[in-house]
Image (cartoon, rainbow over all chains, first blue to last red; front, side, top):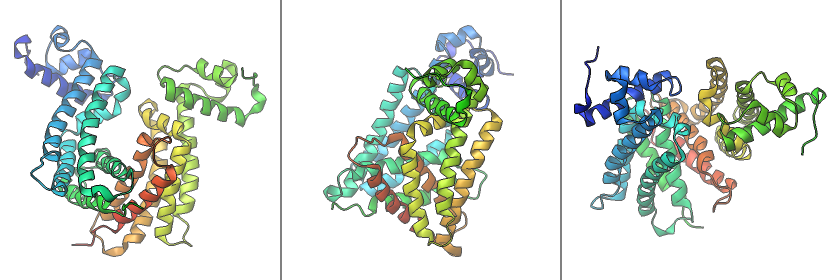
Length: 202
Length: 202
């Protein structure tokens, strides 16, 4: 059984709350998990819990914001590295997107499955973070396309690429025939063919 | 104001309940819509409403099942038409998938956003219908690939294709620069390049 943790542990406790809550939300369901369940899983009192988060919705928002902050920090560094060719940046970004999504699958599925439970203001924050990532992918696709593609084509390819890589966390099975690295090999090649497709301006 | 409808109208009433309920679930939220709201929108009494559906969850399930039944009837006819080359069948299926998803966007987004509200047995039924479609796409991809592709590659390309076309309903804007037909033109070419990608057996 977990030892009791006091207020002193500070940030570390907030992180453990997010990790345990994501597990509970994912396996038991957001609606079926109480603040008390989370506190018990972490090994803290309800009052310590309320010191960190006001309510269950705040915990869900914290999980979502932390995931997107970590994800964007890693991905934007790759996508915006102007010293490297855009094709290399896109390939590395796709691999990193798939790796992070797989490593933190419980958090990600919790976030994707419970967007409706966030407040409008919270959702606006998360969508804004997603748009930053989307914009960085769009810039790299635009650099690869150059000025001669049909209007709207770089936007369309960007959405297609994001739908492609975002979908993997819903069906990838770590015990299946392919490793996440092998999926990433195949998906970076798919991305190349989507970007290079017949998209010249008419 | 809608005229009052009695029990006599039969199937037509059940369909109107599904249509009005999908609108309410989509715009107001599933959790914020009551059986009474739905009855009022259709112009029937609550008792007539209960004659057709036992509760709100049953209405959501009926919306999901009817959509998937119509979708599969249309798509499986195209995908399994053995008289036509598999490449033509896949292209037509992608166009039809995007067209139906756009025409019935309110229902589709209601279904996608509220899967957690279905009972386990209801969800099993819907997932089974989705798997039938997935299997038919997989068969066509397998026919296009032939026996020489790397193990698991036809499965991977199938999931990629489905994620690609399923994503469109979340971001497509009918008032945007491209029509759904233009998106379909581009997506059928993308599908060709995904299927034709470097997937020979190693």
